[in-house]
Image (tube, rainbow, N blue to C red; front, side, top):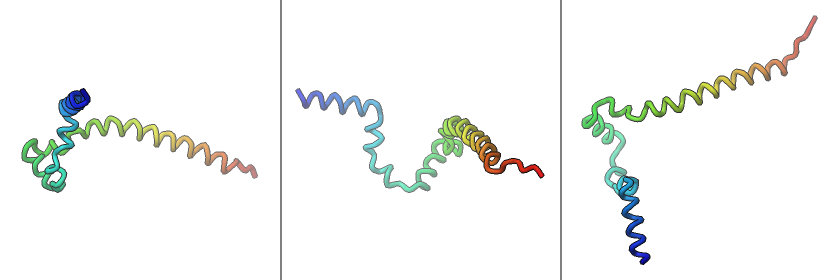
Length: 87
């Protein structure tokens, strides 16, 4: 009974593709340059940028919030640190 349950679990994991990708030791030993060459040969130069749009979509809004908050609090803190001195 337990062996059959384990077989079903292993089969479902490989069906998702995660186990199939993790079980490829040859890809782990290839250098970054060799992988880049393979991508350029099979997909072209634009293949190197696959997934870049998703990174931009997540990075730009978070960066805008970060720097907007940074500027706001910097001005706020500078106003508190340097009170107006009237002569």
